[in-house]
Amino acid sequence: MTPEDTSWQRWYRIEPEAGFTPGIGRLVQMLAYARMTTEHAVQGLSVEELDAVPPGFTNSIGMLLAHVAATDRIYQFLSFEGRDPITEDTPAYRPFVGAMTFGEQGDRVQGRTLDELLGQLREVRAATLAELRTRDDAWLTSLLPGDAMGFANQHWAWFHVMEDEVSHRGQIRLLRKAIEAGKAEAPTPS
Image (cartoon, rainbow, N blue to C red; front, side):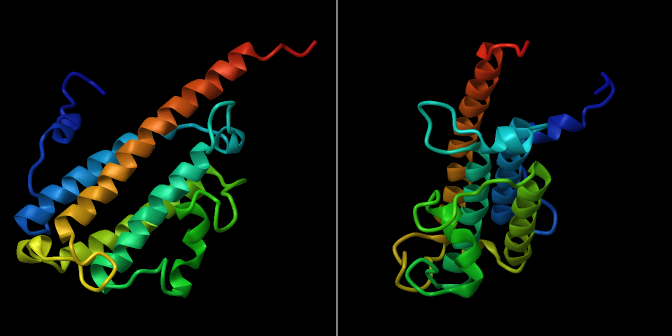
């Protein structure tokens, strides 16, 4: 970044994103900012680092990244389709079950590269953005369809997706520091 390059400043303004209604466009900007900071927090991590679970922690960074993608996906079902893939047997959701439950109801996420995990995040988010482009601000204030969460509105649902990512990004940063501290404390091979 050069002193003349001010493109980074756009991240410090929440404004309607082109291609969306104003309210949805602002929400999309917030989702994008959260994702940008998550991607920055994991930059350069190896598979070993993504799979590491330091003492005192229960999840790996890779597991948390997969969970963020799964959360986005589950809210696609809830918000856009009015279906709850957790209570329904939804085949399209099965690949996300392990990540959504942090491995409690499926395989733990291991052995995946950063490119694979970021690719999954981007693929799921692209589907979310495609759906949001077809909606308007009146939809944003409408209640989620179906029985799953008929008391929450669409805006809350997508705010929650962002909130969940930001929360797990904080965990990712703590995990990364613990992993780096563990490497510094490890004895040097002779």
